[in-house]
Amino acid sequence: MLYARALAELGLLPTGTVHRVPVSAWPARWPGQAEANVLTAFDEAAGGVLVLELDEFFAARALPERTALVGAVRELAVLQDDVVLVLSGAPRPLAGFLGSAPGTDLAAVFAGRADFAPYSPEELALLAVRRLTATGLEAGDGAPEALAEHFARTPAARGAFDAHAFADRLADLAVTRVLRAGDVSDLLALLDEEAVDDAREAKVSA
Image (tube, rainbow, N blue to C red; front, top):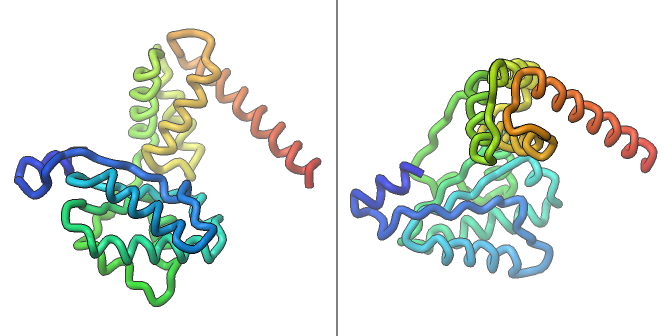
């Protein structure tokens, strides 16, 4: 994370390390649990940057849990002097997190806010290709274009997390090292079949 490195080079932080935590994974079911998890995260990020990653799953948590987590972050953040705290997420999860504890001005903890435009389908495709390359696969002829077409048909995919998650699913299903346009289309068809099967199972279970 360039931001953390820049702060370290300027002497504003002892290290340029980054500690990422998905907030939705924090349990907060009993008194003191939220505070313990938040404090552990701050301790592990000491001297660097703590990034609290927000996703749609946080909104699905029970209101008392969301309130406890937001309150713990608000209470403990003001006590830290060797950690830079960053909230990262799409606009909807961010708004939900900041509004989860009425009367708690969590936004006041942060010095500023930076809004970034959503990635274009072509940019999401590039992120997915880089992720595939990191897993040992190669995007062959037409694969980036096929991926871009997929993301153009999937408006809900807007960030790097979506691109990486999608690339990981393709990597799990891939049977060749080089993925070409036809291979991507075949894998997309498999994913569509899985989605239909999952929907049928959910309907039967209900």
